[in-house]
Amino acid sequence: MNNQDMANRDLAVLWHPCTQMKDHEHLPMIPIKAGQGVWLEDFDGNRYLDAISSWWVNLFGHANSAIIAALKDQLDTLEHVIFAGFTHESGIRLAEKLVEISPVGLTRCFYADNGSAAVEVALKMSFHYWRNQGQTQKTKFMTLENSYHGETLGALAVGNVALYKETYAPLLMEVITVPGPDCYHCEPGESWADYSTRRFALMDAALQQHADSVCAVIIEPLVQCAGSMRMYDAVYLSLLREACDKYGVHLIADEIAVGFGRTGTLFACEQAGISPDFMCLSKGLTGGYLPLSAVLTTDRVYQAFYDDYTKLSAFLHSHSYTGNALACRAGLATINIFQQQAVIETNRSLAVALTNAAARFHGHPHVAEVRQTGMIVAIELVKNKQTREPYPWQERRGLKVYTYGLSQGVLLRPLGNVIYFMPPYIITEAELELLAEVAWQGIQYAVSN
Picture 1: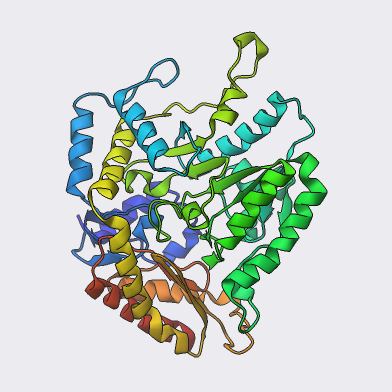
Picture 2 (picture 1 turned 45 degrees about the horizontal axis):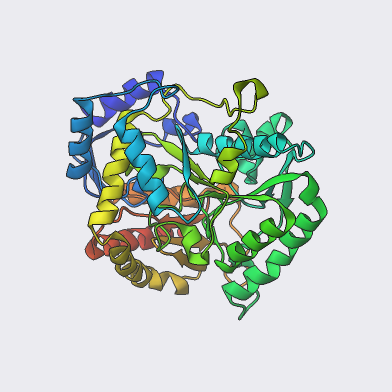
């Protein structure tokens, strides 16, 4: 079996996510046969450095022996059981670990299947909390411009990336969208902290005006990942926590992409010293091995649903695979790696290596900004560096970087014209240098063709 055979079979039956399938008339489908560490191998023997952690999920490499061993052990015992009225050891132990390592006050864990589902849970739980408290006027949610929280209808509604949202606008609930703290728009010489503080005034004004009708503010802490990897300062989170408390509004932290060490701390909220009312987790939760998400919340929220059945106040949200035993065991193995190895400290050293590898991009004539938070680096391509005029999206310059990268054995998947590095935590400095070199050459190719 070779690449072409597998691609032909694929294109005869499959429909891929976030893809215009007609592109594959000229853009090769890459069938992957195996993975090892940061490398993927196709059926023709070509290798690709997984610079995006397979859509931000793979933390400790493909074919990680510790996670595989845990899954094999779990498979011999229990693969899955209904999680309503039943429980199992892996689900209990993972919840105990998540409560232990998460910001203070988050004491209850509700499992779901994926990141979008976790956001749906948090939204419904917040709305239902206020309803159980008799505050039925609270029906709205507040979100930031350029935010992204998933593709299901509730999650899509509270996002603000037009590419994903506009088509489905007639189906979506109305939300209150507030101008964001995205530091790409800083004034010359203005620090991220000063800009984020200045921009928070807009959020404060919106909360003051709408608090009576708002259930929660939902936010991606520090990095708006699908929103072109735009970044802001932790002071914004501190101010937002204070304001939510002041105005009586929940704070939902969507840590799906930024949690589990990606930003330099285990959870991004730690950098502001805050605890949200709800924290959504997925992606790296299982190290990239199986679908699982969790919503952590407070005992105060939990108690608002704890009553006699006849009061009809229970939270009836459910998924068939809630608390899947195999996925929970993968999550346990992932957290064990964090607790047994100096992952966060190693990541901080790797983040310095990432900074060094990306340094040359600052001077590129078509790069407006190189920004970084922990183990995320983003490089924004523009037509004009001085004015920051973007390339027309129709030119698909980022796609040219992607195709060049594949030809050189590196998997880069830009967000429009933003090239980013979000590699597994086991990447070496030599592999980072390779990744940066291929990205540099890919940009050279993209801006000249």
